[in-house]
Amino acid sequence: MQAAVLLDDPAARADEEVVDRAIDRYERRTRAGDKQADAMTALLLRLREHLDRGEPVRSMGLTGNERAMVRELQLLTLKPTMYVANVDEGSDADNPHVEAVATHGVSEGADVVVVCAAIEAEIAQLAEADKGEFLAELGESEPGLDRVIRAAYHMLDLGTFFTSGDKQVRAWTFRHGMRAPQAAGRIHTDFEHGFIRAEVVSYDDFIACSGEAGAKEAGKWRLEGKDYLVVEGDIIFFRFNV
Image (cartoon, rainbow, N blue to C red; front, side, top):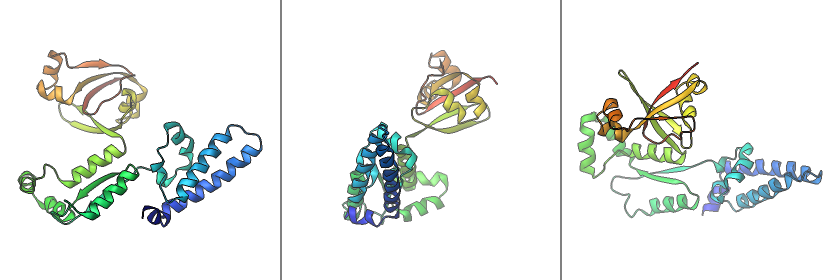
């Protein structure tokens, strides 16, 4: 069933055309004596065989180096995917349709989130103070929309850090693996170019110590340099010079 669906998928057909053109291009380079084109040609032929079976490229389990090799092709079926299953209230348990979507998601490494759009519509109409009680009655701890957002962050390997001041607290999105100067650039390019250091405290320590002064007194407030890898929930004060 998976193959039948994907063979009719415009994204899969587009990828086949892109890969076919790339195969022609790299095979010509190989015939011209370009030894470096051999590895790319072999990889492209694997991609074409995979697509011929009706399977998306993201399910191939490509290595980081292989992903880098084909990045220029911008293959649609290599892009991360999330499936959202909309169900009737109370019908997500033992639902064969949900199970089918979940199985399909697992087969290609995609996240699957189950929501009830009718319930989400009701939540959207409630006052903020009433949402918690409504969710508790349903046996839920958070709205389905929150689960979708969390899954999307996981899919895209994103996280959140914070900046905090006397007048404003802001949340900023970063990609895991970013170093402090890159994260500073999410706020303003001047912050990245003129980066000096970052003053960092975790959200949990900030709350446990009742703010900046308590965190500093407890030794939880630390200085980090340009090689620091930003962590989910960091509260950061950037020092920079332009």
